[in-house]
Amino acid sequence: MSRRGTAEEKTAKSDPIYRNRLVNMLVNRILKHGKKSLAYQIIYRAVKKIQQKTETNPLSVLRQAIRGVTPDIAVKARRVGGSTHQVPISIGSTQGKALAIRWLLGASRKRPGRIWLSDSVPN
Image 1 (spheres, rainbow, N blue to C red):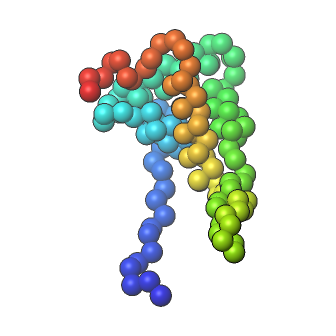
Image 2 (image 1 turned 60 degrees about the vertical axis):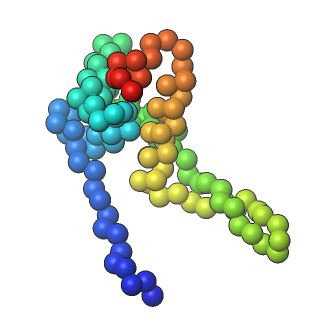
């Protein structure tokens, strides 16, 4: 039995304007060099652009995008008899959302065009 206590489950706080935890998770992943206000500006500008182009609720578009990328299972390496096998395991909803946000931001940063947050913030 472990002598250390179990880690407490942390709940994500919601953002000030939309009161949505998913937006706050996205802001925290965009965050670079501690510039949280800049990350909020980027998200809110993107949400406003989605609202103007699609004329639908931008949070539902964001939820749909996250849901489309969220993985259900992942593979984990297991050693069985000297050889390594990839064994599929199921992923929890929080871990899946975190992976989906990370993948979406990674793909958007690789796209050509305006480079956000890397040019505007000094190293």
